[in-house]
Image (cartoon, rainbow, N blue to C red; front, side):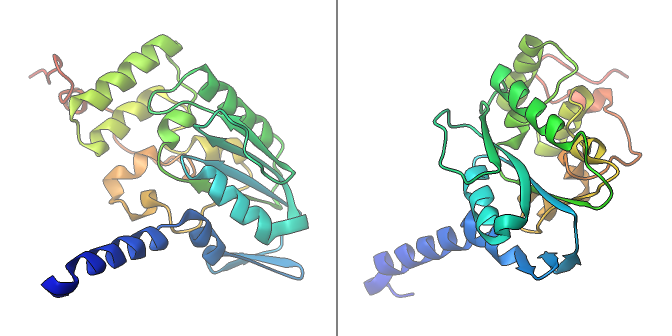
Length: 235
């Protein structure tokens, strides 16, 4: 890079970054279909049915790319994103709007659609879980009343808490977080292509992952809530 070509070099770098993060291209690089089999992130499966759960701000692009590759082998799917305009998605994908950055009744209804889709999964089904940013608000089933859940999330977003602390707190009040989707899909394991930002986070951030089965680990402590204004750890 030289000063004489600085603007062109910066523009080229920006374009390369956007291209590398293109959700449709990333999905396409991780899924392939051959006669009698489907490859996901380098692993081969021969499922009776293939279902897709795509959630987040990039959910529509990811699901559309998966549908193109899977074609007639795709049995069903639910797509959740924040736009209220119904996107043009091929059947059997169904679109449900949610809310972001705070969850709403729309998010709860969309999450119910995912639950219904996964309610009758069988051991020989394959569930592709495509998750991008924004899924925390879009995919949620809180144990709190909605108004309280919204207030807690708003406080977390304004608090400046580290993301690990935010995720630890969220998991205590949301049955989807930290492996809820994996439980809903049982006995069929979920499979997620390896491009998700969640799969690049350190182990301490895993608690948020809805597609990973819950493992024994520490519950939220007073210290986890200490980052919230007006809340401190006792002792």
